[in-house]
Length: 401
Image 1 (cartoon, rainbow, N blue to C red):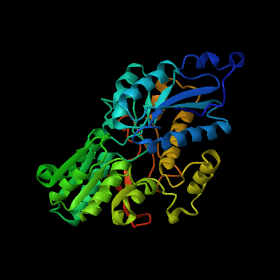
Image 2: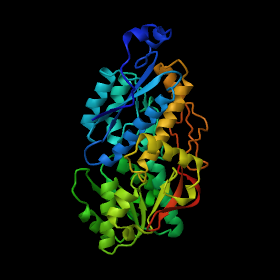
Image 3: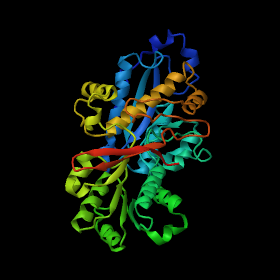
Image 4: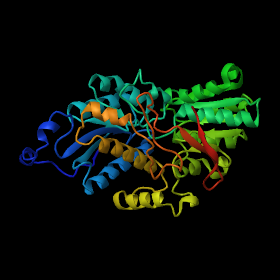
């Protein structure tokens, strides 16, 4: 599957007439009238629901192009399916770089997937911006000097908040964790260890799953047997729904925390059974369009108008489209700041110099900031609790660093 926000092929003759051509020729993926960027998305495979992110981003740049693009150039986002398989991510990324000659890779989904392509992109001097993962490893500038994390709170920070909250309620809490057996899942374990310290091994029982597993029922039964009174679900939507449903079926009622990548009502809470999920705690950093609190909010109204016009078939209850809107808007700000210099050097310079960028679909008070030594655009969250119908936010903004 290939999605693109380009509005059509450009005639060679028309390009030759434009004065910016000689400069543009020195910038990979850039012509006088176009900026080519690429990404991989799981449009098929076990987490195809996350493909909504790519669809939303393609729609955003289509909208932007109809308004004239960025500094006179249209943005051609080439979005390729990788089926959520890292080897396919590598294959498709090579195609984007070597065949499509994109200026940068943007918002590709998956922790293992972005890890798999990082060294290749570094060797080709291709920026890897606003990664579709909250894994804290991508903030390590020594290991990933040309990458920024996505416009989302880091998983490790999120887990720290859960541990602090649980311990405030019960200093002797015992934790059970179901986690995906990769860097995504391990980030939650690392966050718990950051807070629990030397007590970690004695108070945490973990179980893992593979993305290809059919069910995780046996792992949930094992975790219940540990006697834990706190349950952390570090899972993607399919397995999060299974964890919520199974723990409810076997009568296990611990204080439960749910990864904020799996808070979707239509694909997680409803399949699990809303009664099973009532009381579960997670975190938010974006506005939930279904929250009545945002009914008259200008940012949400703008997002709905965008969705209605450019993605009319999409589910407006799916917050993946909110994340897509935020990520695309953040990249737009970076590319606008580049002016007419879209060289790799300047793209990276601007990507690491974002200051107090307010996005209309981030929670009030949360701003996007990056720096030469700070590749974490968002580090604040707010707690929220599922009430059987929707998520209710509570408390102040929290920082997990």
